[in-house]
Image (cartoon, rainbow, N blue to C red; front, top):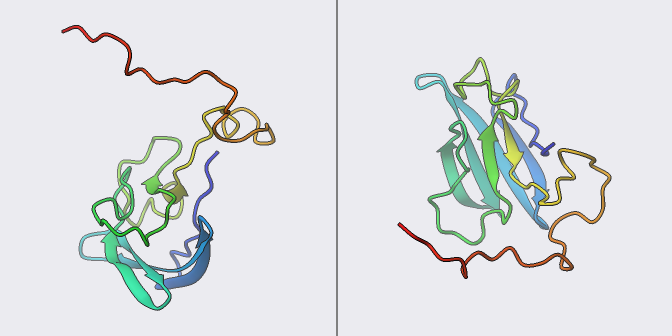
Amino acid sequence: MRQHLPVDVENLPDIYDIKLAGTNYTLRLDYNPIADYYTCTIILDGEVLLEQEPLILNQLVGIDIPDDRLPAVDLRVMDETGNAVSQGKGEFGDNVKIYLDVIDPNGSEDVDPSRKPLGYDPDEPDDDTTDEEVSY
């Protein structure tokens, strides 16, 4: 199971500090009632890196912004059950959340969260498929 960012949709704007990939950020979440979507602003050391980015279902936050100061971990708006069809007021904060889009390739998030080691296992053979022939 992925970790999600806390959002208090009942008390907006929701502004809080959070440590992501070893860096402290300030997040601000707002709601746009005209278009029925939430937005995210990411601030680092008082400088706005991402302002009022619409949070769209199944999309990465800030994917089009080429700024290496943004969080090094992917933030994805999603419903882990796959049932949501919208990221609007009826869904966001309940089924739809902002998740840290990090999945252990060894499957520990899905099978057993206490399983070690998490992440890449250097003792496993390389999964590089560039040597395979491709035929069309």
